[in-house]
Image 1: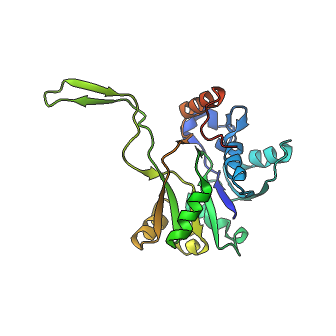
Image 2: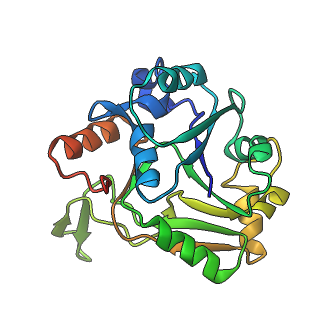
Image 3: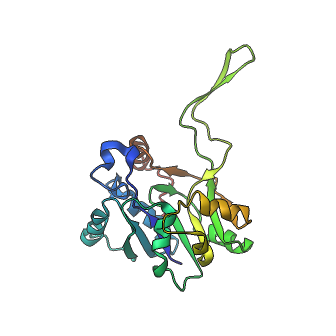
Length: 235
């Protein structure tokens, strides 16, 4: 099964750290976050990758030309446009997925200790067009508990939220292309329509998940790696 990775965004929230380096190449433990993501998939038997390039895409091409890592990866890099939206990027790699009954898609900035075989088994069991991975992120803030008078009764230091969010790690049937256009935003019309039609299911992942959205997130992921306690390192 092929894996499509969305790695063409500008990484605007990373500020100067994402200005000259594509987000997918920002390092954790001396290697790009994209390397970590490919390791998660390849360790579980997925070695065919389609990278949706955009902002500073040539830097990603150069990385794979110059890297001396000896991996069994088959990497196809596709220029999907500088400012193309997520759904549009997937739409533009359709020729590379013809003949595939189903395929995986994920964001190039999210890491998890996800069991991909369990995810795919879940997808196949329900028979719908699309599966996303639902996660419960940690709050970026500590929370207060207040009594009716306003007195602080307890603190909760960045607790795990009860709500579920889209954590990426999708599995799609090929007919998902009927829901995508060249300029669609995956998280809007395509997924909303799939949900309305009862064709979108959520695989609940309760383990580790973190998105590298900001420079602070990058620091936290590096600290986990340096401590030897990186939960996503399942290889």
